[in-house]
Image (cartoon, rainbow, N blue to C red; front, side, top):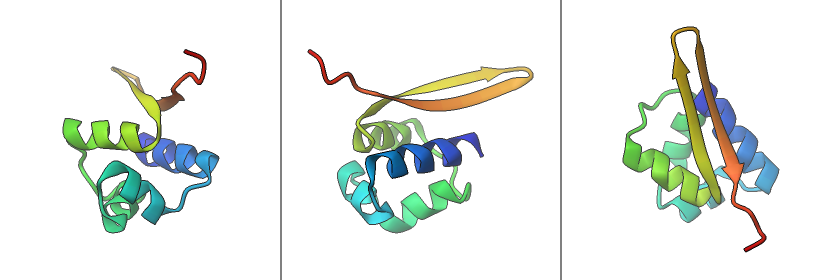
Length: 78
């Protein structure tokens, strides 16, 4: 559920439709829909594609009583 919420949140923050994110990430709109609906089990490759499409780094915290997922936007300053 945390991944679904993080993807949806970052996608809407960028003002992207599911189809636009799919194109940027090299995925299908149906796959984005399944991810946002928590109906997909992501692989590391898929997570990397999502991070690229969302122009962000993906941070995962997995602990005994805590699981958090966040997309941190890439810095525009270089």
